[in-house]
Length: 439
Image (cartoon, rainbow, N blue to C red; front, top):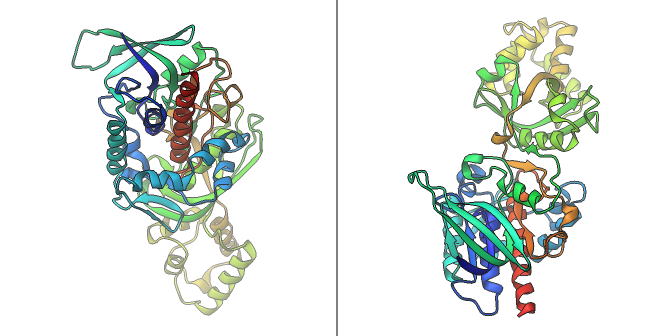
C-alpha cells in the first residue's frame, strides 16, 4: 500500500494539470507525494482528439465572456478562470518552448497544429515535478477513513486475464474523471458514481456538443459539404422545453447521417440545456437561414434586382452565387422549381418559395446522436456542493473536483479545455496549499 499526500484520478487535461500543480505547490516535494491514476495505457487520450487533432486549447475572448458562455450559474467558474486564465495557460506551455496562433474565429491552437505537442509538454511537467503516474489501473472503490482516502485500484490491462488489486492512500483526493462522452477514451461516468457514493448530487446527464440525425436524404447525399455562417432555429411544440424557440448560428457540416460542425454542436448544447426531458423533444423540425447576413427584405430586394438585370440566366446557374454548387439542384427540388428555367420565366410564387427557403429551409431532426458521440457532457457533480474558490467538496473535506465532472459545459472553441485546465490548476493548488497549512 502506497501513501501519498495528493491522489488525482483521471489523466485528462484537468487531471494532469491538477497533479502538476499539486506537486509544484507542495513545500516538501518528493517523488511519493502526488500520484496520477489513469485507466488507459496512456495519458490524454481524449485530449489528442480535440480540435480535430490540432488541439483548440483556448479562445481569445475576454475572461468574463468566456465564463458567461457556460450558462446559468457559471459565475461559479470565475475563481478558477481568474486564477489560471488564458495568458497563464499559454505561458505554461510557452515556458517549454511551444508557441501558439490565434485564428480569425478567435480559436487558439499550437503552431504545430498537433495535439501531441500539448501532451508531450504536460508529460514533461509531470516528470519534472516527480508525479507518480499509474497507468492501466482502474479505480474500483474510494472510501474515506478519518482524514485519509483509501483508493482501491485494479489492473485493467486486457492482455492480462487475471486481475491484481492494490490500495493507495492519500490525504487529498482530486476527481478529474470527465463525464460520459467518448467512453473509449476512458470517460464512462465512473467518477460520477464515486462522487455520488461519497454523498454528492449528480445533475441530469445530457449530451453537449453532439451532431443531429436528419431525415432528409439529400442532406446525407451531400456528405462533406460545409455551410458557413448559417442561422439555426427550432420552435418546440413539446412541453418538455423550457423555451419554445432556440436560435443560433455557425458553420454546419452535412454528413452521412445528418448535420454536424461547430454551429450544430453549439446548437445541440443549447437544446440540451433547455430540455426538461431531452428525448421527448424529438422528432422535431428545424430551419436553416442560408442567408443569415441579409434580412428577408434585403434578400427580396437583391432577388428582384438580379431577376430584372439577369433575366436570361438560368436559375441553377444564378443560385451558384448564393449557394454551394453541389447544393443548388437539391435546393431547387425542395422549392419545386425547374433548374433550367430562366430568371425571367420564374413566377412570383416560385420566386417567393426560393426567397422563403433561403431564409427558412426546413429539415426534420430525428434525434441527437447518442451521448457517447458527444464531445462534452452537460451535467455532473452539482456546483452547489463545491466551493467555487477552491473546488473542494462542501460535503467531503479533502475531496476536490476538476474538469468535465463538474456540471458545466461550454460551447466549441476551446472553452471546455480552458475550463479543464483552470479548474485542474485551482484544485491542485488549493489541495496542496491546504496540506502546506496543515504541516
